[in-house]
Image (tube, rainbow, N blue to C red; front, side, top):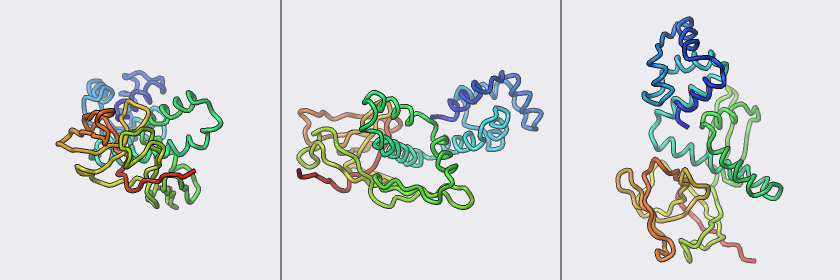
Length: 249
């Protein structure tokens, strides 16, 4: 979620008008005008300075970390955004697995959609606010630790895993098998990647071919699964396939 969308939600929930917010900002020593606020709300300019974000958060009575973190993430390189999005998606899947046998499929799908649409800053703050020294997500091989100074430390203890839902990469990766993923800072053509298209619910596994900001995905079964092309801004790279695990009944 871009900073502008989060800010619009924060302002709407506050009940303040744009005029009131501008007046309060000026009182707090951060002078902004109507045009500037409008550009922030409509994603016409990059997120403001950390100081302005803190002032806006205090005026709207929300945790200032939300706007501060979302501002930094919005301006971060795409590789950083992909890592956070991948971690959030995998954490969501892990959390929903707990309820997979207890909730209706449609309810689970709605929960997954809602959890993956929340601002990344909300996802991070929710872990920071958990005072436990260690938060382990063993199914995905991740370890999230909250340090003594209440900051977040993330480490990948094991490759993450997901269950494959189609035969696009069979027989190398059969339907129903599990794949172990590794998150890397940069991926290359020829890698077998797990990809989450932002407007779709499920992920896909394909060979990747990079051409600047365009990613072409091909399968081992092109007759049934034709090549597809995406702009990198429209996808989340979950990770590179490292292992295939097949259960023998």
